[in-house]
Length: 132
Image 1: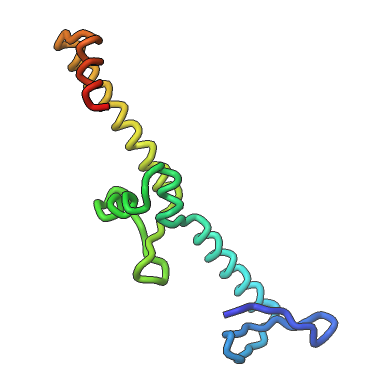
Image 2 (image 1 turned 90 degrees about the vertical axis):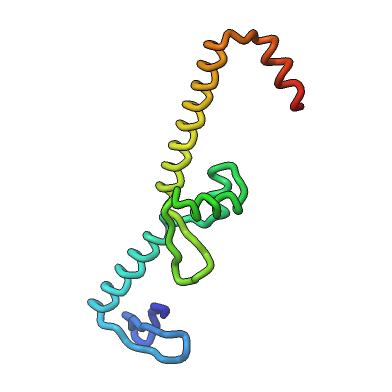
């Protein structure tokens, strides 16, 4: 559906078109309600991002985002299509913050284990050098 204003008079007439030639004239009140509905839906759609956008934000591949979604770690919706998934930007940013916090906690735990094992920095460096 398209909302258009035609200039049949000096004030114009609001019309609603389905794109197939069917046109319905709207009263000013109907036009305002339709306009508000379109703006509301557009605002909701703007809050949603694609898997490609999420991949860029998270610094991972699109396929990794799909695995994250399949694992239920970020909620998503399918808007209109059965194949494309959309997420709220806030949910993606919250996941990023949560995963960064978990990664830092894991690194801190590794450092504590290494410190308690009394392994020298030289031994750690030599061990890690084998994987380069």
